[in-house]
Image (tube, rainbow, N blue to C red; front, side):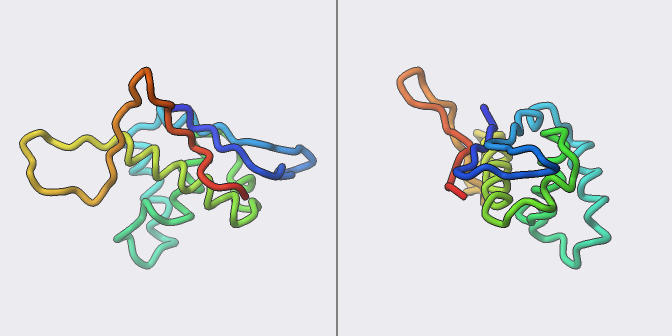
Length: 128
């Protein structure tokens, strides 16, 4: 998966203009990375029921995946962080596999890999 979030308008951070953020590092993140993120956020969040859907979780995942400092995402306009959050959720859901023996529906959306005739999904969901 490409995992590059493109911004409709540039985002300025510490004197540099960004038109995109590369989250391709998500492919290298491990379960231990996710556990570490959950532990880091456990003190901040009252409820961990939907941790993966929080902006804080997306911010931490994006920080690990992109190598950018956490402030890059903390200072990002709301529309842009929502774009990043959506890309992360889509990436996490795309990697979910349904067991062939399971007949119960799962709460996540599973996306199939595109065939050679289909265009691959892009992380750029909505313009900011």
